[in-house]
Amino acid sequence: MKPTSAKNKQPTPSNTARPPYRIAALIAVVVMAGLAALAAWLLQPAYAPEYTGGARLQVDKTAIDFGQVKYDVPVEAVFTLKNIGDAPLRLVREPVVELIEGC
Image: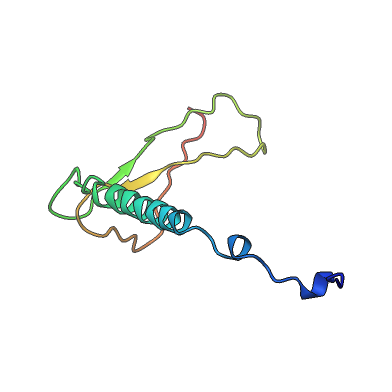
């Protein structure tokens, strides 16, 4: 009897074909994940503006007190602006910032 070399060996069917239940399970997982993502997107609450009848600007702070600051020492303030209306908010010019010194 001749010895068989590794080149001539044919793969057995159990090594090459995946069982159909694995493929079906993978498809089921992908479909379920897609349905869960779609449901999460569809069930988001609808946007309800706080003000109807146009744009309305809401500012989180109306004043900032830095206390006593030495001359020529820079300070920084951050304001958060939000449109709470039902129309687009457009800033047509630079906002006016009032600086009160010595108060």
